[in-house]
Amino acid sequence: MASPTISVIIPLYNKEREIEGTIRSVLAQRLQPLEIVVVDDGSTDRSAALVEAIPSPLIRLVRQPNAGECAARNRAIAESRGELLALLDADDEWEEGFLEEVAALYREFPGCGIYSTAFRVVSHDGIFPAPTPTRRGIVENFFRDSAHRYVSIPSASAIPRQVIDRVGGFPDGMKMGGDLYMWIKIARRYPVCFSPQPLCRYSKVASNRSASTYTPERTVYSFEELYDPAAPDDEREFIARAALGKALVLSAKGGTEEAARAIRTFSFTKVYRRTLWKARVINALPVRWRGPLLDLYNALAWRIARKGL
Image (cartoon, rainbow, N blue to C red; front, side):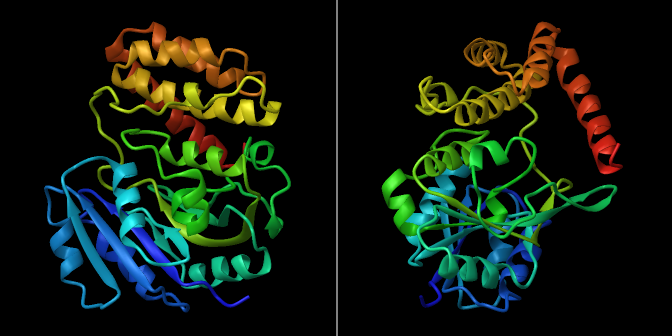
């Protein structure tokens, strides 16, 4: 099988500190893409101007009013032409062999829904490998193997266009968890392929990682409507993990009712009892305490995990 044509898909919103490095990591790839489609989702800083200033014929900048990351990804996909759609957040970067490796996976393991690689986490404490599978090839059970490891994150993944055509795009209007929602739709229908080469750098220190204030999502999509009680246990548990993780963040921002709904729906979980417990505790506290307490917990958990304790 010949190498696929590759479109790089970058949603952009207020990343003037990072976007140049992100795009230059694409231009430094050993295997060059067909195009780099950047959708500026109503940025209010200099992000779009910095993209325009990069002298490359591969770059195509599309502007739209702010509609959210999922809508920006979908717009970039609609504007692109490649057979393989390589996703990249505007604050992450690739190592120079990333596109070469996902193209090789595409040739060697045809028919998969996602092609992903391992990645490193860039934090204030340094750069550390993320916990990922160690075997190259088709993942035996995406939902089970994602329980305690990262199989796919957006910036380290590529999706064949024909897969998007079948399952549909990212969930417009969903502010958090849109990538996990997409993985569920794909992994229900297709195998997932993985390479243990760490070819992406995921940033925990980037600007504007998430909004600090709570506003309700305006979307028809949710993990509750995606949930199928008749699905295999591993799939049900993966959805519970995604929904309860989102519930924690929503609760910390003030989304008490939304978090309570997720807690009720996914209280069946056996694998993620700790996450369920955390969500219940956080949601029972006064709103002003929730964010600082969750931040403290996450900071301690990160330091413990990083040290291998």
